[in-house]
Image: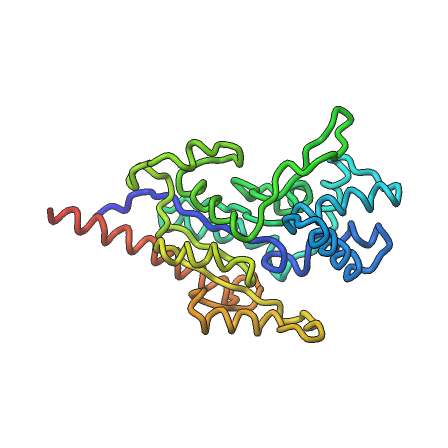
Length: 287
């Protein structure tokens, strides 16, 4: 039986999944000259005081603190902050390698970001060109290309809609008609069982639960070098709890290097996608 070419997808959270910490902590918050703990505490307090969505609160707080400090807030400034983001081991070499591996299985593999972080920052990173879509929070800009309002806020519950956008082949955030439209399963470009979701913690739970329910695969990664905050669980402990509660299929260190546990696990799931597709067609041949 000749293997048919199929499309598959991997969706990634960004913060603490591809890069350690929150993306604003790499370059933006240091430029403000305030401790990161203070920045997030004040942003969270703004959300509490005004009963705001937490993502909208931190985005508004970014603009307020930038104006207060006289720091430019043009689109290019935010893109430039992304250039300073550092990644987990192996990330920058991983995408070409894993895409090529999938191609040996006659699989066209697309990579997508689904993040509560900022699309502008991500678009400035060294890995931005590997993604079919960067579904992330972002700003609206005025005629001078200065950020003036939150255009999109991706929080931990509405992340799930972007999995359906990938499933249905919708490469934007604004088309709500098509994402809610009934499309027969066989007409969807990427079936859920040909999707993998990679995240790092509790904010990814709704997406992971939905992915598991739909037949996809889920992987939680943890930072082996992160110092646990006082009174908080470590990254590894959070992942262990997630697997104990059956919220995720696998937990592994956030190491994307060739031959790492994560690298081998993703390849196994690519193999599984190929095998399941072949079995499906073998069954069809018996009808």
